[in-house]
Length: 116
Image (cartoon, rainbow, N blue to C red; front, side):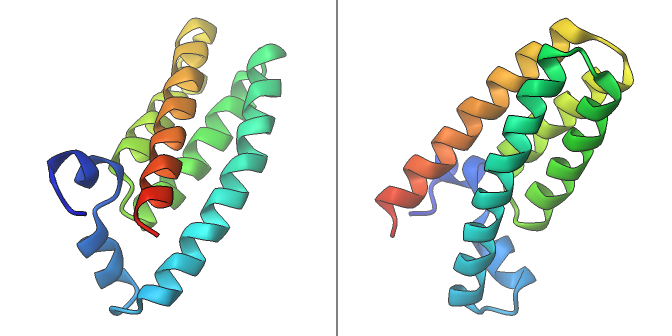
């Protein structure tokens, strides 16, 4: 479960350490993250469509923090790219970051389905 590829999706030992070793609490937090991510992703899609780069930056920043808190390095990096696109007022970069975020989130979901 914890090979090189998987640690890019989730650093499970680090995430577990953050919650004091409580695996069921970690699962709960990940479930909440998935729910929150879904809502924020829809908001991001709309913000990118409307070229609302301030909102792109804010949502990217929020997702970066929550991804980091759960030791999700790939999603944290994709969220950082989104935040930077908003900060730089670069809509093309935001579109690419949105695609990357979607891909990384799908990988997380696939990983969780295989390992639960």
